[in-house]
Length: 391
Length: 228
Image (cartoon, rainbow over all chains, first blue to last red; front, side, top):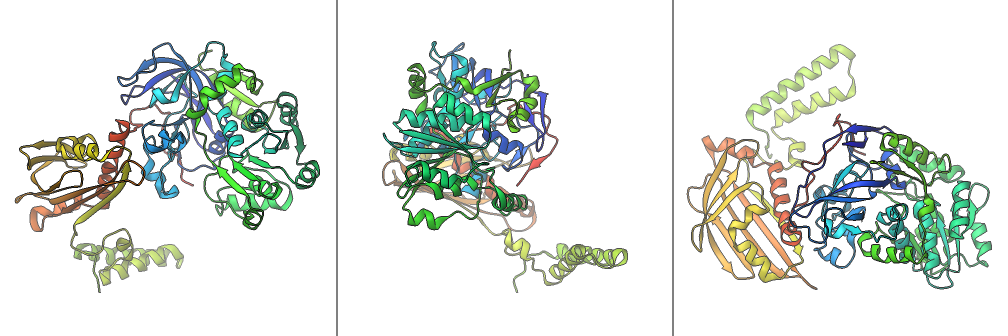
């Protein structure tokens, strides 16, 4: 089959590889119909996440059709149209049982390796480096899905592909961000990052009762999409002093909830940006935490900062004095997708959250590298390019 | 002074160090890295002590016993966890280096292990020396085993639910003649492999399978790797 493989920093190639096989009794094989690019892939492509190996198949946000099931798969049948959650959970460990799927004890084959860095192993993720299991990703014609009964969900017939695909990762990440930020009716919420996850965090925050949601980014077309599709107020940080504007816009209090949907490759202005670029290039920090710093500074006293933008390791100059003295709460996590899928199906059907507008560029797998190039450069109005391996 | 470098290796070390020093000195009048490396090899050879070897776990010339300790919490009741382990023939389901464990009677068993990196196998007999149902199982190899080994597993209730499992394995390499080859197998790498395998117990008993990617498709492995 054809698959989009990582071959080095900003070097992606479509290669001919073997078709996947059932390797464990709880595996299923899925014929991939749509597989979305994700902002977190850019950290792999741009070389900021360790343990990538040439030949790794990328992609983790996808839908498809079940074509084969292992002997211990009981909830799925051949022909089922499914969305598969990007993180892999065994369903049996204490974390999965408590619905903390991304913390699964058992799904990461390289858990022992990962422990050397994180102290405890976390869940495997499709196409997301060997630290996260080294699982082959979804930018391919077929993919093997371990623990398929837990990770693959039948898509209700009335939900079209272009909405269902984002239930795999983008929507649950945005929803969990709003939930972790503790959004309550009447709250003012600030979201950094107007990419797919940020857009979904905006809609989820409104769903949870937010009075106003303000989005911060520098890409005008994405801010415009957040305004028109998600009813957000927008700030372009290139033109303004974000902290001043947020203070002004919230009657001098600051937002109740702040969401970092950007992560380790944050851009910022002036000296701060060059400082972080230099430290990251010299490996003195793995992450550029400009957004996290700003979120901590912007948040009202006693407010909550939720982090879903991906960080890999260590970041400098985190304003702990502000965090402590303002009495903030900070939460983070890779999303626990399996917990949110049924709820998100309902929200889509009720029209409360609509992700379809994010699919700006459907592309064949042969143009996979081009898809990421557009996405990486934020070119041509791209919010999400989605690969259609069988179109 | 502790010594952890054998005599052959000491001679080789001094020779290699001298070669490196001489060559570097002639060619480039002292580039620092080969100079330092050469000096290090000579010192290591003449003292018979290598801090690097020490650091990676080689504490003296004699291959010491390898002790492996694993602590894990599994989300299953203590009776079940104990029973799975007490049924010794289950052990190969999570420890891939074991080919077979045959229970001959209540106390005695025959173990067959694969020798890493070869087609060979090692066999030994073991007996259960302690058995406190739902609390503790202790076993050791009987006289005549090439690698004397013993193990102990303890089971405790975890605070909220599930079972804390404490596992200790120890392997004593044989002394002299035949023993040298086998002693080489019992290295830090072997230790890591066995540790990982013991931890697969949790995967097997909770998830019913050991996660793997062996046999999945990939593009051409050109060898390029992003370490940091």
